[in-house]
Structures are given as structure tokens and as C-alpha cells.
Length: 193
Image 1: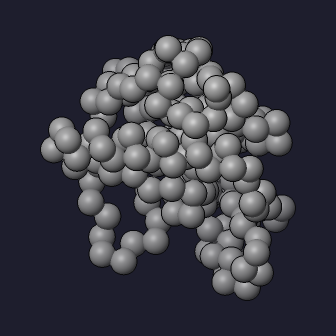
Image 2: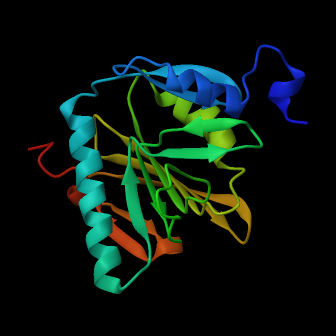
Image 3: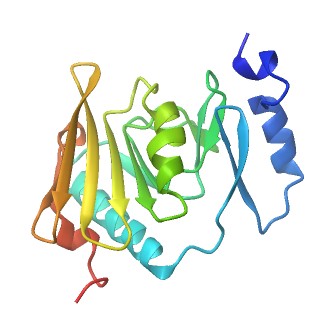
């Protein structure tokens, strides 16, 4: 029996799906460990630029290397039935082809969240508590929106044991689990002069 069935204050994935069916179009919600969380709508342009830059950089590298990995951004759900959670990561990398017509994934390899003052605690604590239980996840990347600063948590030999900080436009983001490395200047292109 999952936690939502035991605690009446928590919601199951099935009940959350029903709630989403009736949600206003201008609202976005996540289910994080059984709790419904209303998300920010209309992120600042800097947030969108970072996601766009990362998306292009990763896709270009994956295709160039003949990798099966691809990306999805912001409106594609990642679900975890055990928690129960239905999340909208800013960017996720998957390396196995989803079934035709899929509207969610359960097996992300890399998850990226762009931090702001309003989301940092949730991304570092609540979402991380869910993400770290995903067997397929190799890297969790936290990108600061307001300065060239990236934190990466790596799963090595099955354990979350490496925490790396890349600071400054000359620093590099390395994601060895998917064979990618890039300078932060590429992630933050067109943001800082």
C-alpha cells in the first residue's frame, strides 16, 4: 500500500490525474510525494534561455555521437508511483525510446532544474527526495538562473556520492553517464555580457 493510501492528507497518482483533467489551462501543478504543489506559470526569459541553450547543446551532442539519448523540456511529466509523484522537470534526458503516444516517463537518466529564489528549496529538498530514488537517474543538475553556477549530483557505482560545483563561464558541466561535457558559457549564452 502506498503512502497516499495511508495518509488522507496525501493524494494518489490516480486522484491527481483526475484533478489535472479539471485544472484550468493557465495553471500547472505537480504531485510531490503525494502533495499537490501549484507551479509558477510564465517563467522569466532567463529561465527559458537556459533551458533552450541546454536543450540545443545536449541534442546536438547526442545526435553527433550517435547516442540514443534525447531531451524533453518543462511540459513532459516524470512519474514515480512509489512516492507518489508526477513532476515537470525543467529538462530531462532519457536514453530509451518511450512508447508511441507516451505522455510521461519513469526512467530519466539526467534531470535538470533551473533554480530561482522561489523554487530552490523545493528543487533541492522535495524534488530531490523523489529523484534520488529513481533507479535510472545518473545525474541531477541544478542550474542557477542568476549567475554562472551549476551543481551536479552524480550516482557512482549505485550510490549518490559525488557532488560537484561548476562556477564561472569558463567552468565545464560534465555528465559522464551520458557522455557529455560542455562549458557553462554555452549554457548561459546570451545571458551575461
